[in-house]
Image 1 (cartoon, rainbow, N blue to C red):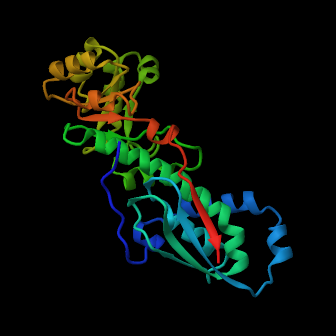
Image 2 (image 1 turned 180 degrees about the vertical axis):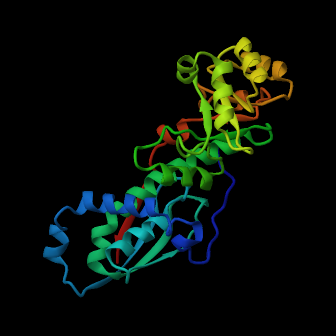
Length: 296
């Protein structure tokens, strides 16, 4: 699908704080681990070939079509190595583009060279997720359904990948097991049934909290509604099954379609009348966009 987004030619400088990443301790820890992985005991090549007091300028270029995402993370990478490095965006976070400069960098040459790969890895991965999210959001436009991500994320990278989903235009589901109740098949089995599971969850749910239940057929849907579920996740149903669930629910609960959804069938699923479609492919199958950094 061809996106209609056009990049802003001269956006204001974007700091990590502007998008809330700079104050996120989890993001800083991810960056620390990524740099430790790449640098190990030190950048042997850069230390051997570049003088400690050398300065440089560089440019990050986008080399494949898609949504730009991750410049604030790249800025944090370089700042972690040397706070004197300055990253100036020349394309807007969340904009669609190809074959363009997206940021200019200036500062100590050693920090720029040592941080290059880690910074690009973040930008490439997050731009891939944001691009998949933008395509999904465009596919469902006008269908009345909202696309949600899932917890099928790269271990340790969830906060960043969910940020990229938002940049692309879709919405986050749970960030983790501690911020929402979703009663799935194994919970139901362990609890002794849908009614028992919902009842137990409701007793632990804050007054404004929601209880979501996974079901696989109309009988389970009826039981979940009767038990007091707020949202019902209809798992692995084909479009006819989803339409039947929408008709049976008749607006009494919100419905989420999940399982077997891809960008190829997303439009058909979204048109069934469900409120939400969860799409693990936003994160678990998103590719990386190609970016480069060139000094000079």
